[in-house]
Length: 510
Image 1 (tube, rainbow, N blue to C red):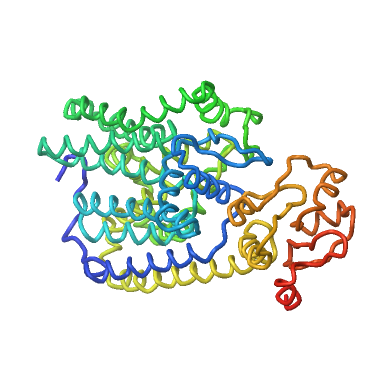
Image 2 (image 1 turned 180 degrees about the vertical axis):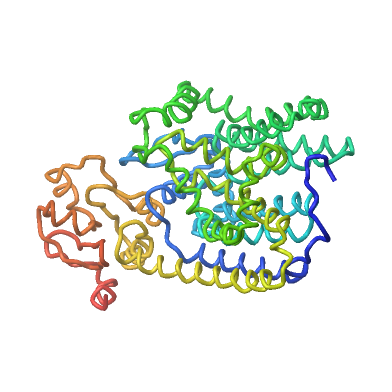
């Protein structure tokens, strides 16, 4: 055992599940997540925007420059590096442009993260803590949600966690060759992180590792890193795309590094080309951390209910505890880092979920709770219940959101495409990204929000509009409603409003 690991007092507790049972349980959860991936419509604006980028990349064959349609204009998307979009585009080429394809990369990154967590923790702390860490991670509804969304956040979490867990293995190993391999994994993870979201990956993984070295006085161990091969791997992975992108777009590096990775977190107006950032308040990351780690964070109440347990929790303030616990430093450093800015989303603290889960699994084991039969039985019964609740909640969210809000209008757009076989759709006023994804080049967007321009310009086309928009800005000429839900409506052609004959019976039924 490494000098930095505190041995568990007494024999290690038995795992919650046998190895085969554990794999069966993961397979069931993976199947549930994949089914939900195919059913839940895209969520506007962020997920639909990234899905649109994947679609355009797959159709154009341009894997260098991510592009999107913003305010009716096809333009480069320079806010994020391309790896997540490239993975989604490849999936679209293989499986077709659909929900399964654009969401598959996040699912695979989540699976990879859990595999890295399990392998590293099992090697260092044993099977029981590894299983419990994986299951607690999966019990987080936030983690389960973003394991199947077309976003860059799960890919970033994979890179950050892979780097930190690689460093855990590096610190634990005593064989020189194994140390070098773990070190190489650390540098490679950072290189992939640069292609997922940029320098923030280095910051989020580097802070806990730096504190781990500093507090534990591990400076001498740095000589065992694969510095030459590590830096070579980092630059070979990360640098080529940045060089090629800058050659094709001379202003890219300045906008990406200065605006998106510096000004974004310091200034309210940072020159965002694709909308505006969401403002909260400094310290909001702490609330996001607690919400992200529910319900696992409630297990901390178990030791808090006894005097002995409260004493164990109080020991966390000791420097020696921080010095030797890299997962603890991981979720503390990342949370405190994001507390410094007011522009923070819940997805920013997603990497804290695996770190907190591993720390909690390890701590409950050290404190003697994980070895108790009552605790193990209760946990085995509670975790499936949590996942059932999560699955039901997601299904209700899908049903309710598609009918009563404009955040997930995908099913309605699919119905529009099925109803109108030939024809284009003019989206009245603001065009959501999901309309471009579901309806493709049949969408006629417009950047002008003036009703006097929007109304007459929509004459030759079937009209798509939010009901509140047509109520606030009446159409220049009345049109008959062909299809509607709680938020959206599809209107017939101008004049008599007659739809194509082949579609009339279906429209009347609706």
